[in-house]
Length: 281
Image (cartoon, rainbow, N blue to C red):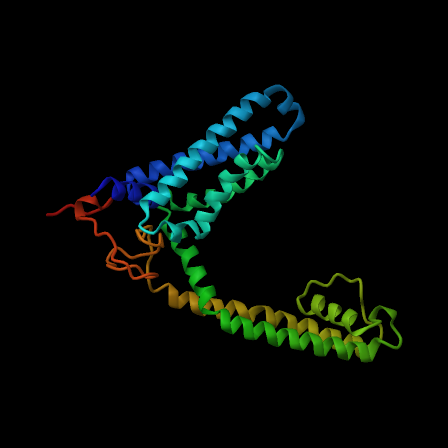
C-alpha cells in the first residue's frame, strides 16, 4: 500500500487499531475544542484565562485544518468528500476561527464541531450503529415518494376538516373566525398536539373533533410502517466502515468489490490486514 492508502484507511476506517486510535484522539480534540469555546463565552473565565483559551482555540483550529486537508488528499476525488455531510461539517468547523480575524465573535459558531462527535459511532467496533444510520438514510431515500404522497393526502384532509369546522363553528365560535384559523386547529388536532387555544363548542363540532383525534393516531403510524418496510429491505446488506477511496461512501460488506454508490473498485485488503481474521488451521 502507498502512504496515501494507509492514511485513508487510518482516517476513514475504524476497523483497524490505528483507525480506532485516530478516531478516539480526534473525538477527544473535538470535545476539548467545544469546551474551550464554551468556557471562552463565560465573561469571568474569559477575563482571567482569555489569552490561554485564545491560544488553545488556534491550536485546535490548525490541527483540524491539517486533518481536513489530509482527508481531501487521501480521497481520489476530493470534491466528493468536500460536498458530503462530514466534509461540509469539517470545513465549517475551521472557518469561524479564520473568519473571526475579520468578524469578532464568529468563533462561537465553532460549537458546530460537536456534530463531528458523530464519528464516535465508528469507534470500539460499534459498527452496527454506523450501519443502522446508513440503513435509515437509505430507507428514507427509498420511501420518499410514498411519504410525499402520504403527506399530501394528510394536508388535503386537514384543509377539508378545517373547512368543515369553519362551517360548523364559524357562526357561533369566534375562535374559528376564518378557514385558515380552522385549518390551524385541524393541524394541531390531527397531529395530536392539541394546544387547546382553539376548541369547538357545539355538539357537532365536538363530534367532528373526536373523529379527527382518533384518526390522528392512525395517521401517525402510517409513515412508520412505510419506513420500517424499507428498513427491512435495506437491512439485507450488512455494513461496516469500509470506505470508498473515490466518494468516501461507507457501508460496504467485507466481500464487496465495488462501491455501492459510485461503482469504483474497492481496495482489497489481504487477510493479514483484517483486524479480526481467524487463524488458519
